[in-house]
Length: 616
Image 1 (spheres, rainbow, N blue to C red):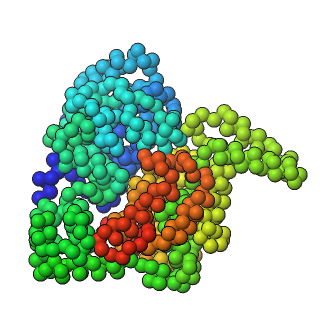
Image 2 (image 1 turned 90 degrees about the horizontal axis):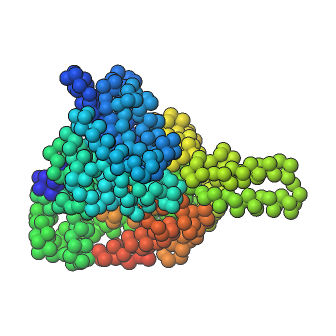
Image 3 (image 1 turned 135 degrees about the vertical axis):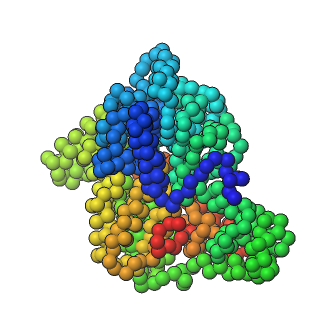
C-alpha cells in the first residue's frame, strides 16, 4: 500500500549490518553469474562510512567462501580535487586499504578518478573515464550513498539528468558535513571529480544506502517527492533497477513509518495510537483533550476513533499515557546500581545531564563509563595552551624540567610541522586524552558527583588517531562485559542515536549490545538517550524528565566544563551552534510540545526511550 507514496523500491531493515550483507551478497551473485557467462562483472563503487560494511562482508566472502575477484572491473564514483593519491583523505587510498588490497582483483581493472592531475588535463581524464566505462560494457551494479543536500556521487543540487563525469564545485553543506574527516571544514577541498547523473543512471542496477536519523528528511524528499534537479537522488525514481536501502532511523520520515494510517488500514498498537493522536494534535494545533470526532475523521483516523467509540475516550487514554511518561525526581528510581555509558567524554552531560543529576540526588550508585577517549576532538591550540601551563608551572616550582623539557619540545616540534588531518603522535594523543578526561571529571563534579564515579574505558576500536575507526573487536566487547560483571547494574543509560557524524555512537552501542548478549547476570533495564544531533519525540519517548530553569542552567554549566569543545567543536556536524545551545533549544522544545498537547507546562525536558532488546 505504501507504493503510492514511494516512487522507487525501498527496503527497510532494523540493522545497518543487515543491509550491508544483503548488498554484498547481491554483488557476489553478480560476480559469480558474470564469471559463469565468461565475462567481467563491472561494479560502480562508493567510499565513506556508508559502504564500509558492504566491503567487509565482500572481503569475508572472498576469504571464507572463495569469492573470485579476478574477473571484476571497478569504477569509483568520485574523488576530491585536488587530492594526492596517498593522502589520508584520498578515496583511492580508502578503496585500496578497505577493499582492493584484501581481494584478488587485478589492479589493471581498478578505475578511480584522479585528483592529482593538472587542471588542464582534468577534462580529458573525465572523457577517458567515460570511455573506459563504455568499453567495459557499462556498469552492472552501482553503489550510492546520499548526501544531506540529496547529492549522489558529488552531483550537487542543480546537476542535470544527463550530466557526465566532470569537475564540480562542492556545496557548502557537503563540505561542512565532510569537515569531521578533514579536521575542519577549512581543510575540505572546494571541488571534486564525480561520475555524472547520466553515467550513474546507465548502470543496470543501483543500490542507494542511507543510515541514521540525519538522513531521514532528504530520504523522504528523494523517495516520496517529485523528481527534482534540486534533489539529485530523486532521479533514481526514473530507474527501473534502483533500490533504496534504509535502516529504521533513515526511514523515520517516510509516510509508511511516520504516519502509516494515511495509507489505509493498519494494525493498531498502543504506541501507534499515541503517535497518531500526538500527530493529530500538532496538525490541528489543539491540545489532546480538545480533539473531537471531526478532527479524527478529517485526518484519516476514523478507524482509530471507532476502536475507542468516541474522541473523548481516546483522548483520555492517550492523555493519561503521556502523563505517565513524565517522571519528576519523586518518580525516578532510588538506591539502584546505574551505569551511564557515554561514547565521548561529554555525551553524558550533553544528552542526559538532567536525569543523571536527579538520579544522583536520589542516592543511586552511579558510574559514568566513558567509552572512548575523544582525543581526536581536541584542537592543537588547546594542547599548546596546556604545554605552556606545564612549562610555566615547572619553572615556578622548580621540578621536572630535566624530563619535562624534552617532552614539551618533542610535542611542540611535532605540532609545528603537522599537516592538516595528519595522525597525531602518541604523546600528543595522550595529552589530548588527558584533557578530555579532566574536563569530564570537572563536568560531573558540577553535578555534585565524585571523581571516582568516572571510569575511562578507552575502547581499542577508537585508538586509530583518525576519524575513521576500526570495527568493534573482541577486546572492546570484553571491556564492556567486564564492567557489567563488576558493577551488576540494574539500569544502564546508553546513547541510542545514530546521527553521530563519525559513527562512534553507533559503534559504542554495538559494543554494549554484544556485551549484553554474553552477560550472565540479571539483564539491566536499558534507557536510551540521544546525543547532540537528535532528540526522541514526545510520542517515541518512554520517559520525559522535567527540568526547572535552575536545573537546565546546572546542566549547561556542566557542558561548559568541556572547554576543548566550547566555542567551536572540532566535529559539530552541519550545525554550527555550540552543544549547549542545541541542548537548550532541544530540551525547551520538548517541554513546549508537551505544553501544546495540554499536559503540564515545564521549563525544559529530556526524553529517553526504555527498551530491553535494543532499538526497534
